Image (tube, rainbow, N blue to C red):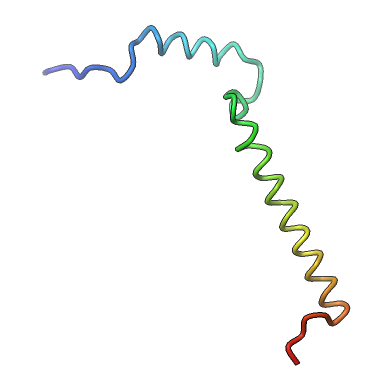
Length: 68
């Protein structure tokens, strides 16, 4: 059987593994841009949904925005 060439050299892969294993953070926060995708975006979605729910409750309780 013919062996397939690896995507990355083994030395580079081992170097990256050692770098990631040495960082003492949760796995989902190890990359440089992971704080944006794991923390900032969910917080923004939660804040905007809470604002919209609050505005809807306020409008319903005051009768604002009814069609007729």
